[in-house]
Amino acid sequence: MVVRKRKKKNTLRGNRVHGKGDTKNKRGAGCRGGRGRAGSHKHKFTKYWKTFGKHGTLKVKKTLIGINISDLVDKLPTLVSAKKVEQEKGAYIIDGKKLKFDKILGRGKLKEQLIVKNLEVTKKAAEIIKNAGGKIESMKEEITEDNVEEQDEELADEDFEETSDEEEK
Image (cartoon, rainbow, N blue to C red; front, side, top):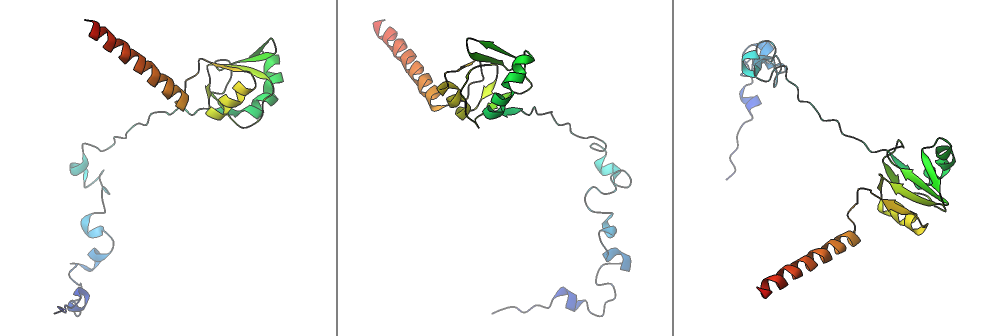
């Protein structure tokens, strides 16, 4: 059977303060000195004295500044005149240490040959640069399927050499 129980509100009808003590106490969290760490610098100091006034420090995250291939192509003449980009044998040598950006992004088309040094390059940008006859040197290599396959082949060759040496002994 279902137990029928009266609501607390209805049982306290006729009681002026409804179990809250003084009339003031039922408003907000005043009856308990505030919610959470409220008053930690006054009346709750003894409870929170170890952590009072201490704030955690955040590490500064470096945000990479990227540039699309189309924007880079537009800026090439000005960068060459400012001697931030060198030109040799019809190819532009782009050194990341001389420029203000950190990464080349893949939006745009490329007709010129680019030789990229010390810059991160996205997969799409790398394809565009290589298809135009350019090169990518000393960049932080991103993990691609080709890199993983090459590494697996190298590891397999090393394992094979080690086992053949052990068999000869």
